[in-house]
Each structure stands twice: as C-alpha cells, then as structure tokens.
Length: 296
Image 1 (cartoon, rainbow, N blue to C red):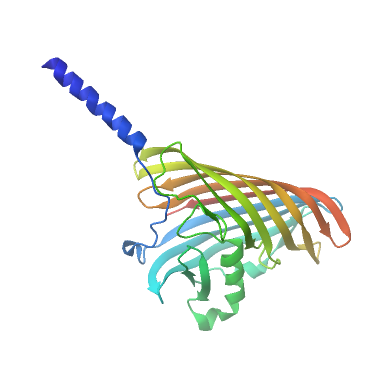
Image 2: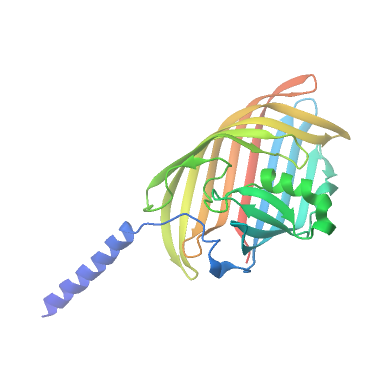
C-alpha cells in the first residue's frame, strides 16, 4: 500500500511538471474586454536618443511622461481609449546646453480619445473637450500616430503595419517572428516623418508564478533600417538631420498573463550610418533607449 501511494504521488508531480511545460500562452491584449471599461491604469515611459555631430558635439534628446489610460467602450464600431499624458518632460542637450521644448507642455493633462482599428493601431484621435483643446489636434496626431505609436491589440507588433506569426499558443522556449516593410514615425514632435524597416524575433523565455499571477518574460532581437528625419533646435537654430541608419534592436518584456498586457519593457537600439545636416555630411552612431512600465 505504501509503495502504491508513493508511486501515485510521484506520478502526480511528474504530471504537473509536464503540464506546465506544455502550457500554451496567448500574447494578445485583453484591454478591450467589457470588464475593463472605465478602469484606469497609469504607465511610465522614458525615452533617450543620443548621437554625435562632429562639428557640434554630443546631442541627447530625452523625454518622459506618465500616461493615464482607460477603455471607454465602442463608438461607431471601433474601440475607444481615453488617454491623458501627464508629467511631461522633454529636452535637447546640445554641446552641454539644455534646450527645453514648451510645445510638449501644452498636452500635459489634456485628455484625448484614441480610436483603435481592427488591427490594433490608432485610426484617428480627438480631444475629449474639442472646444477647449482643439488647438492640440496636431500635437495629439504627432504624439499618438508617430512618436508614441504602439499596437493596442497585438502589443508585440511594435510598428504600424507589422505582420508576423500568430502570437497564440506559444510555449516556453518557443519563438515567433514579425516584420514591417515600411512604417512611419517621428523622432521629435515637430520632425518630418521618418520610416523604418525591421525583422524581429521574439522568444518566450520563461513563465513564473508571482503574487499577482503568472508573469512571462519575453526577449526580442531585430535588425532595423531607418530613413531618418530629425528637426532639432541646435544652438538657437532649427536644423534638419537626414540620413539612413542600420543596426540592431534588443528588448526585454514582462507580460502579465492574466491581465493580458505588457507591464514592463526595455528596448535598446544601436544604429549607425551616414547623415547630412545643411552642407555637412558625417558618419555617426545612434543610440535609442526606451523604458515602459505599469505604475498602477
């Protein structure tokens, strides 16, 4: 009898191990569930872009902000998210001189509605208070359709137009790929559009049980090509930097399995290429560092 019980217990634990190893996970947002209507969450974002222009020196562009978000339901057949940016800070540091950008500050605390299409990307944006914040329409468009663009349904499709393998039924240790042929974005609020081409590989590293539930760790690596257009205030003058950069991207993500959302991400890009500013041509390296995390 004792041997039978011992054997049964052993088989039970072995079965648990194999069940965990065979468990499949879905990396699609649960943001648009009706249970989430009017539930507000706050996310912190920090971004840094740095490079060197030989005739000027080291240039660094930094931005940070909190984003309060809540799903408000469907309107006209599409999902609507209310987003409010707060604690906005941005600056350019050029040759050790810091230049603030007051254009950003106008959006601080002004809510807008993001209309999300069936692909998970922003179709259009409207101020919640159209009368009071109509003048911010251009700023909202540049921010949410360019600088801070993301996919609200398929969060691991990092760029507009990205397509790839299914993100359903992923086991620990498995990988999936995604890519985009051409995606428009903006380096700064008043920059002309830039364009990116990428090929990404994601891998589910592990899933751990935490007090808050199951948390998955995902890592990605990518090759990236950028057609760059950056308008910046450099020593009191508006200058536009153009060129093509190529390099790699590496990211680490924490995914809340139960909530169906990314709760932490760090993405680092290392690129290099030939650029032009006015009549000056130069070779430089671009470094981009982004951190996103759920605050509450």
